[in-house]
Image 1 (cartoon, rainbow, N blue to C red):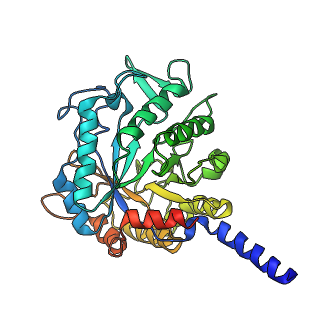
Image 2: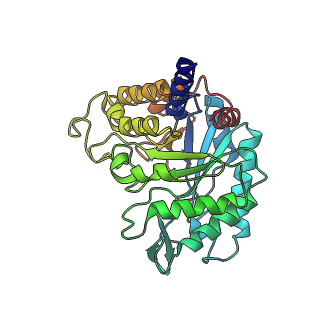
Length: 351
C-alpha cells in the first residue's frame, strides 16, 4: 500500500510538472494596423490606422494559420479613462472576430500599449496617479463583458510588452485585472506578458514572480516574445554576420522561458517572433526555433503581417500575390494546425 501511495504521488508530481506541455497548440500571425498611428490618438480610421480585411484573414487561413492576433490601442477603444467604450471601435473589433469565426480562425486580442495610456500627448504608466490600476481594470471589465458572447477568442492579452514600470508593480496590476475580468467572464483565457518587453531570454530575471498570479478559472497563458537579433528587440539593426548569431540562436533565446514554464507547471505562448527576409541565413534559425517550440508543445504567433506593413523587413504579408520567404519555413508548421478552440479547451480542461 505504501508503495502504491508513493507511486500515485510521483505521478501527480509528474503531471503537474507537465502542465504546459500536454497538447500542441496552433501557430498564428499578428495582423497589424489597428495599433498604428500612435502620434494621432484616437486618430482617424483609414487615415491614421486600419483594421484587417477579411481577405487578409482568408489568405492566412488558406495557408493553415488557425489563429490571428489583433493588436489594438486602449486610447481608441476608450477615449477617456473610466468612460464608455467607443461604439465604432468596438464594432470594428467585433467585425474582426466575426470575420475570423466565419473563416474558422480563433483570435487573440492584444492591447498594444506597453503598460501606458496617453493623454494630451503624454504617456503615463499604469499604476501612476494619472492612470490608476482601477482604470485599467475598468476597461478590461467592460471589454471582456462586451465580448463574452464570442466563442472564438483564444485569449485576452491584457497588455503588450510592459516595460520600465518604475515603482508600479506589473504583478499587482496583472492580478487586479485578472480578478476584474473574472467578475464578468469566467471562461476566456487571459494572456499575461512580462516586464521588460516580455523578453523570453530574460523572463526569469524580470518575471519569476508572475508564477504566483491567481486565476480562479485556472486559464492564465504566459506570453513571451523572442527575437533573434543581438539586442532581442526585433529591430534587426545589424546584418546576420554583425549580429554574432548562428542557426541555434533562436532556440537558445527562447529556452529560458520554456524551462520556466516546465519548472512551474505553467502554460505558455510565444506572442512575437520573426526574422528578416533580406538574408536567407535567418531562415534555418527560424526553422530550428519552430522545431524546438513544437517539440515542447508550445506555439506562438509570427510578428507580423498587415496591408500597411508590406515593406517591414519581418513582414509575412504577401506582395503581389506572392508569399514572403519566411512563409516557406513557417508553412511547415502550419500543416498540422489543429482547431485552436478545441485544442485550447482540451488543454485547459486537462489541468
